[in-house]
Length: 316
Image 1 (cartoon, rainbow, N blue to C red):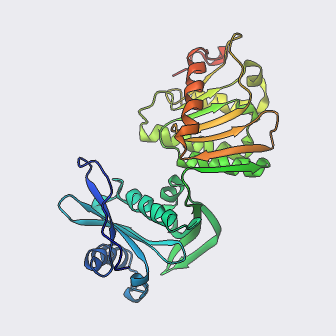
Image 2 (cartoon, rainbow, N blue to C red):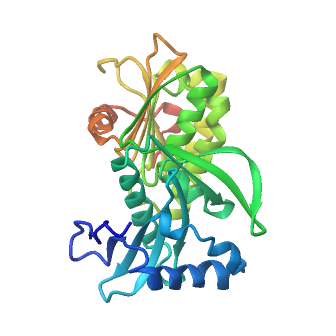
Image 3 (cartoon, helix red, strand yellow):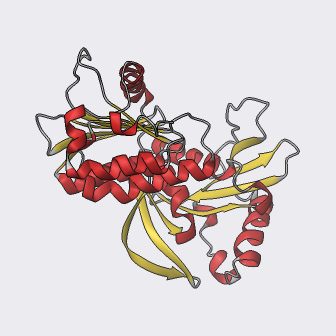
């Protein structure tokens, strides 16, 4: 580890933080300071569990502000496990933890790890979901704190072929959890609605509570004839319930039909289901090269479409 250099990222100097690949033991005091505050003092983790003797074998990332105050850290062990993710209270919800996690994933990728695992405290599951991690196995306890094992590929973007309604629903749930600002849904009648409806509802409510700056954060484009299907009642109820955040439109008769059902999130994530093959889907996460063109195509169709008659008074 001593051969590693302390390498800053290429962040814009205007950003509040700097990210470093730390060297143990050179940066041990700064890393210890963060973990002592977060784990030992705040979470009451016994010191003998926190300081497990493995740090010299691990690779560490350190985040500082421009005054060189250490704020966040995490480590990668020789088996590809990410751990000891800690952010001081003053820097939480500011992106410092995301910088640590992204830097560790990048390091793992350079070391040719195909995937990374971690043990997530259950309150942190939404954070790891946003970064593409998925749960594995059952709830367990470490230092008296509930955890779940999670994993994800180190590759960016993540591109997978998934087959079967259950796996397609799981792929869409994964996309929804990573989406923060806007969601585009095309041909919803071809989606495994029973498997994903609670997550669609959660996403819409999350946008509403967060005050998403995107008008009509959830946009649903559906052919007029499909809106009379019983399974579409939930979609229309949602549009009535959250009219400023959820909107439904129908393409006109001259609209160039585009085969397939799509779910698109934040211009970076995409699930595509070819209509001719409804048991197979393509999941593309952190892939703006593929997601952005489809989202732009969707938005062009959206501008040429109108709300259904029974929702015209509800449209946002």
